[in-house]
Length: 104
Image (cartoon, rainbow, N blue to C red; front, side):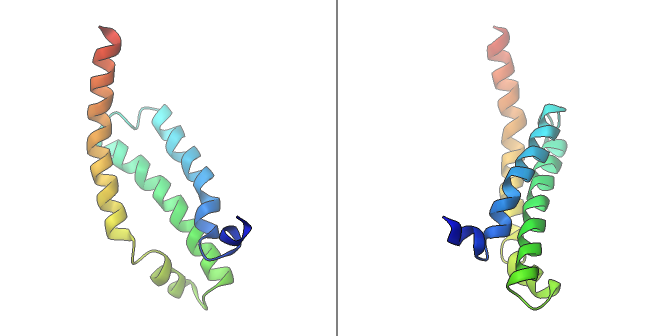
């Protein structure tokens, strides 16, 4: 509800549509077909989400941008990058599998 959008997570939630657009646009341009570019596309989407979240935290909830980064990115960055790495390994292989099935 509105409380989530007005609370500390609001910036992250509001950034999701833009992150989906950026990642989707990169995917439409073939970035999801190879590991490195797939990883980069997903990282770009994550950067958009982090930017929205940290900006929101810095404006409304913490005293400085440094504190917003510490609270809003630091606890999550390593695990998020590991999840992106795993997804980036799976996605190109999935496209190869789907592509083979579509041509048969």
